[in-house]
Amino acid sequence: MTKTFYFDEVPVLETTGGKLKGYFYKGEYIFKGVPYAYADRFQMPKEMKWDGIKEAASYGFVCPLMEQDTPSVELMVPHRYWPQDEHCQNLNIWTKSLDKEKRMPVIVWLHGGGYAAGSAIEHIAYDGFNMCMNGDAVVVSINHRLNILGYLDLSPFGEKYKNSGNAGHADMVAALKWIHDNISLFGGDPENVTVFGQSGGGMKVADLMQIEEADGLFHRGFIMSGVSDASLLPPCTGDGREIVTQMLKELGISENEVEKLETVPYYELVHAYEKVSPAVAAQGGYIGGSPLVNDYFKGNPLDYGFRQHAYEIPILVGSVFGEFAFSPSPYNKNELTKEQRQEIVGAVYGEHADEMIELFQETFPGKNPTDLLLVDRILREPSKNLVRLYVKGGGVGAYLYEFTLEFPIYHNKIAWHCSDIPFFFHNTELVEICQIPDVGEKLETQMFEAFMSFARTGKPESDKLPKWEPVTPDQEPTMIFDRVCEVRYQFDDKLYEKIDSILPPASLEEVTKEENVQH
Image 1 (cartoon, one colour):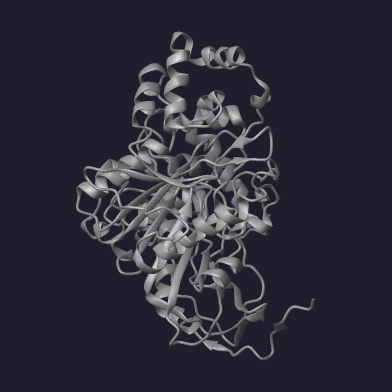
Image 2 (image 1 turned 180 degrees about the horizontal axis):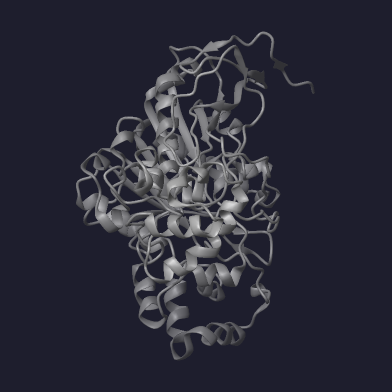
């Protein structure tokens, strides 16, 4: 069946940057690669202006990566690879209307990949078409500077480099400002903006709550598998004098010629950085790579506390059962005998195996005991801690979830990092592995409706789900997203307490090294 497409008939929009023309397809107006700012290397973004009519029919450049992507686990997390360039300050918009009076909720996606990698279109499931169509919302995704382009402090070398350690975050704030000033042209409500992100994107949501310049530019925050604390990602403090000095020496550039760093070919810059940064880090020095704690960015809430304004922003926070358990299992858990299960668990928990299996089955009824070895120890507890901190400070509303679905691969593999993204985006049809008869579409509807309700009202509600209550100082309800969805209270506290009493602290570096994850 022929799908509706037109271009010539789409009106030209007069944005703050200039005239913009998108296209219409299957009931939506789509604008790709829209410039929201411009920045020279290591400098703050500036308002972008262009002459003539900008045709927004192609995705824009994504930020250069320090290491080449290697396709892997594509069945589990299907990717899209795209041309890279430093001038990557662009965004994409999906909307059903260009009527200024529509005032639809606006949902802004911040991609994952830590602060070093990823892009607005990296995952197939990041496409905003279905979310817009089924959610009656304006959907926006953002590209911004990453790695040494977005998070390397050169401020000791001149006023022009002020806050360069937070250039990537300044890009996001610039994008939110552009959205605030222009989104009504696309039928969006600038006073109802939700930012959401997964993994590094989730961290960016919490980070934006800690930046005064972002106040009023968004009104709700959804953090997916993206809460860190100092044990996972130590705060980035100090300044870049030593690391930049060493890079200059490696490149044969004198300090009074520091501006030459602005034009050194990117991969030469990367090579110099990677050569000298280990020694600087070994001495406890600043090497960048994540946002710099300063007057602009007030630091991770779990390390520095929330700013007062943050308590005015409802938050939705969650994680998945297996997070960084990407590798195939060496056994078929469905065919194991009771003795074999005990032996597998005993290899990790020793004399505590029987006790741990019993406690695990109380915590996750119906799950295979061997899945105890895949329980996330990186993000679930910090997620709960973030919500507790928020609630203690008087936040207006916080909701917790955990995604515990098993998938039809590797003998009913438990949910892994990124596996919930297609469900919240209403994009399971784009991801083959989500095709689970009588389960996939139903769960997608439940999760999607709850998210859309949160974006509209600050409360994740659906008549297809049990009542989902906010966390309070006395109660900690968690919505379990699975074949059967249910709300459980403090359900995994005892399990984590016992695990932490037996095993050494979890290390993301060790976990990802073991899994050889390409994320």
